[in-house]
Length: 301
Image (cartoon, rainbow, N blue to C red):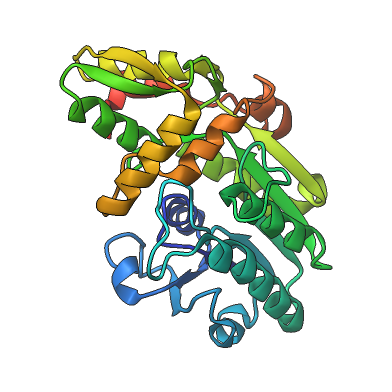
């Protein structure tokens, strides 16, 4: 049996749907039944209520499970606040999960990581993702980690946030730094294909960290231009030093329930968010969809 954590989330819900399409009967770990309703194909899925930050809820979720696909992370687009803590979920939650998985006899864990994950200063968002990866590598389980660049698709927080930013300013749109930082956007459905291959074909992927991106690399400025073209609008891009952007993100996070950018998201601008252009084809055997093609067909959603 396969257990998917974060099963009602952006990637987790798609993994569950794909497994159901394959005729599997996966188990979905969700925080509440309400979060699963309308997002998961409940007839083909065993839904278990639990939380990786509450270890007492994990034994039942892991009973009889052979493989865990771990997607239960707080992503950088969400601001911290009551019930939302990067370290508690990303690090402590992952440690709780691997400990319970060992005790339950789980064989392997495949993790939805991020491109460019590396050691970082204490208290940073990146530190929590690095420590989570380390917990998995040191778990004693067979493991694999997928590190995608920024993801697009219906419900993508990164692209919806940028679209909201463009629509929210009548004349200008602020840019983080010079706008020349590179990103390699990848479609969430292609990410789903990759993580499932890692979980279902362990002989090829166990013990590997694989970073992936789409078939095209864009600068941040080019992404903004493409979104403005898709939205049939024009804005003047105004570069802003990253410290000022981070300050602005902190101020928006203080007053808005869902700010368009958070201080944690600004950390993504500390490094080039791109990898080998053929990373998906070379490691997984297919050519991923491009952001340009997706926007032409679906628009910004």
